[in-house]
Image (cartoon, rainbow, N blue to C red; front, side, top):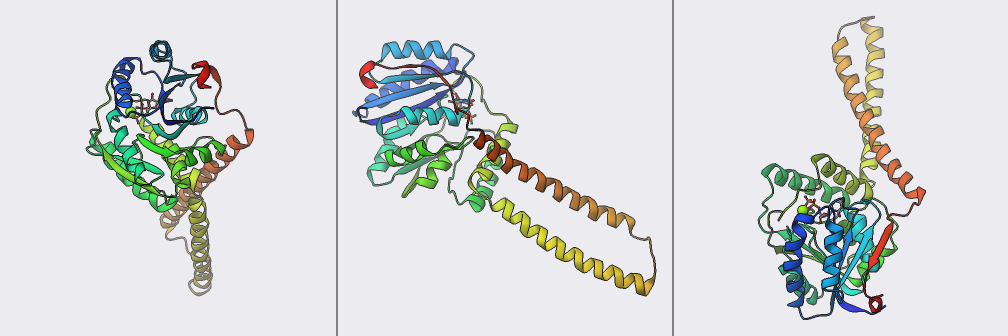
Length: 314
Ligand code: UDP
Ligand code: MG
């Protein structure tokens, strides 16, 4: 496989409205870098005309375009994984197809890498997302940093550059349901972040709902740390100790004061609180077991329908 300087990996899922604008900006931005590059689009089972548009674009610039067509929708991060597995660049940049990350900033990322960093993340200068999303993601970031030790100021920003060594490590990871920037961070030896511009989605709609954002964060935490489980057992020890003291107290009280039935509602309150904690614990266990289950099935993470590339590229 021929090695080149740069691979740009772009997952595409139902982006027909924005793809044209993406091509118009991404290619000139890459041409301006004056390096050998390839752009790898992964069509993640789009149900609109995205695949056809990617085909057209491949015919327009076959020398630097490769298109991987998935057989269904496997998710953004699995799509990026597939892109990584087929990439040939010494450096790899990931980018969203919706132009929220301006392609013109790729040069900045690479310049930062020239300083010796092997992972360059990005932080959106001025987020134009809605206010509640902004606060929610800030709070989530803090929590995640505490639990997983993964430092990422802006986890929603996919415009990131990775060195080949990191990509090779990722390619060896057989994880399902992962979060690429976090996985890459755990392999990075010298990570850095820079500020980039941020724009409103050029066209189309966000593929993520509130629910899937919550899911994503659960995956992030349970996928990279067992701190929640450990906290939980610690919690269990404290509560059992307190409960033991309470039993001793009640027994003594029974002997001294005699039988009583006062305080039934307090007892209910305590019981419900504990039940809530127990249910949460079972749910948490379920998260981990679910991950284990998905992992042991060892199903292929994605299925490729076709790859469009020039013969000499492969
Ligand atoms: N995407 C994908 N598969 C999916 C969902 C999204 O490949 O199942 C792609 C999508 O086309 C886009 C990127 O992942 O290029 C980010 O998606 P989106 O912009 O909807 O997410 P947001 O920016 O709202 O977090
Ligand atoms: Mg987006």
